[in-house]
Image (cartoon, rainbow, N blue to C red; front, side):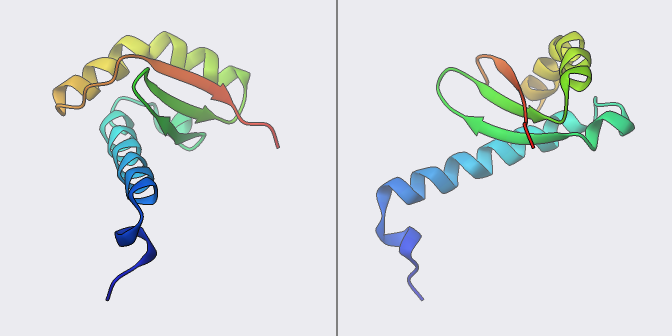
Length: 91
């Protein structure tokens, strides 16, 4: 069965980026403290970097401290990300 994604190059590209972003999140979950991991979601992945969507400023601050470990976790899984951006989600 053919889906709309199969026939649309932009949609297929978007789905590929979404899957890559999820793979990045899976790669860094192992270095996130358990309580913190609950407040982090995968965001957009593009040529400049990857965005992590976080629940609040406190989570963002802690992740800023953990960025070197997050980058290392990505590299160990063979995922090339130029930078990690943090964005606080607003309700």
